[in-house]
Length: 126
Image 1 (tube, helix red, strand yellow):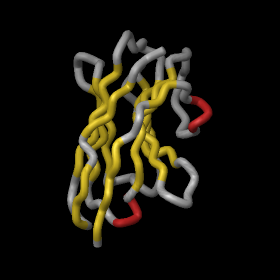
Image 2 (image 1 turned 90 degrees about the vertical axis):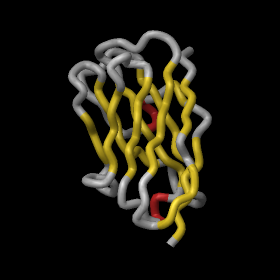
Image 3 (image 1 turned 135 degrees about the vertical axis):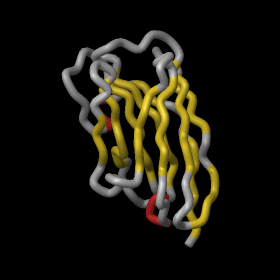
Image 4 (image 1 turned 180 degrees about the horizontal axis):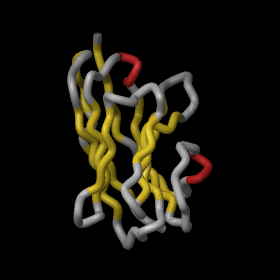
């Protein structure tokens, strides 16, 4: 069981930016997926972005394309989510998730990810 610890959430005004971090304990392989999801009140959990550890291919939800950027540090222990041009619709609890099974690509489907962090709150005011 991997431990994932998120940080970096907070409150910002619309148009602002935040960078979320997720530190993953234990070994992360070269054919795995690391992802960010979000859950807003009254809505289903939504996949935001994912990164494939094999070749660093990234995947984004249409709602965040061009605004959010997922990345991973060279030490391979931390995954980031840079969020720009934030709007009130981005307000949610953001989770880091890991799929450590062998994959050849990533999907933004919660069912694919057995490992989850506790979440970090992002609140965007208009």
